[in-house]
Image 1 (cartoon, rainbow, N blue to C red):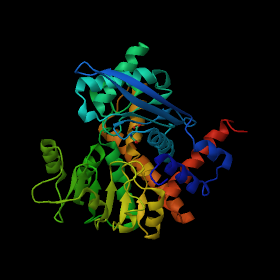
Image 2: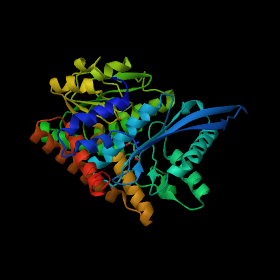
Image 3: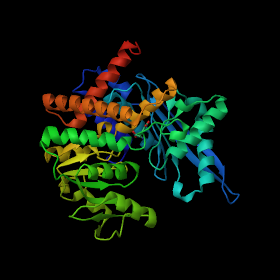
Image 4: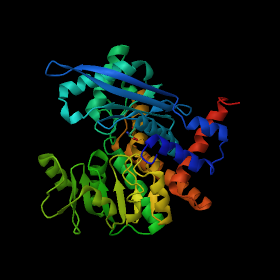
Length: 414
Ligand code: GLU
């Protein structure tokens, strides 16, 4: 139970529903995706052999706007994971009050084992299979784990090719040359940093000498390390899928990034100590940042966590059982649907720019992102304090109110 992300997402909705104003009949609707499809994608590999890849798209809810959410390429993708991720997107978009619902896609593949040419064909094949379900007013994909701006450019091209229209707004996270938005590549990390600054100023009343450990050194984790380092935080440990490094003196994330590019991992970086990857979660730090996959903080390790607070940059890193343990230990969790909402927020800005064919400066994107993240944090903080509940319960309850009202006003139930 603890490891099924979809059951965990449903439990989070139930846990928060009692603090919302939403009718229990509507809660039933919010717990299930509206549509889930499975596709198989045959690819002629570079060696001439055919391989079949399995893919999914889950469309959780579109009452507040088109389905929105990334596409993940990972060997661990499965239908429950995609369903959970799509549900979290619905609540995330409502948390930062952007007019989208939630969706998510995934293909079961280890993209590191495919050539560029094979990956392009896989992306084209996947879009071909889900073409009827997506579109600028229907469902708008974006990057997620192991997909990037290049993947999004292929998606835009394939969709535009089949539809015989130029359609940049069908996907976000595109390269700048293909009508992407300034600030989208760093948006998840930047949004998380804005929320963290607000939290530390409001709750801890200080920013100085904050120590941070980051589990996951991919797009979000590495960018966040750089942003926090530049703001004077001390990054004392980082990890990737191969291992973790630790130094009480602090790490320079740019040097680590260079090292990772050369060697394929953060491990064995001079002047630091290699530690087992899981040990990063139990270090004594001010801020622990899970920035990789779901289910890393569980009932097995939650009792050992010594961090001051947890900033969930990954989706679903903490299971409901771990949540309870951490609540008892009075460790605040800044939940994923708030902490990592900067990515989809700038995706929304990209979509608006695509539809209006008018492009914003980096300053404009950044100031709009900052105000979205700060006002979402302040709503959630105030609600959590008023009701004496966790930030996750507050974020979900406020999101449920927004979505529930949209459902009701549309006359979908009653
Ligand atoms: N994959 C990101 C997320 O989980 C971004 C989604 C988007 O931009 O649509 O929030």
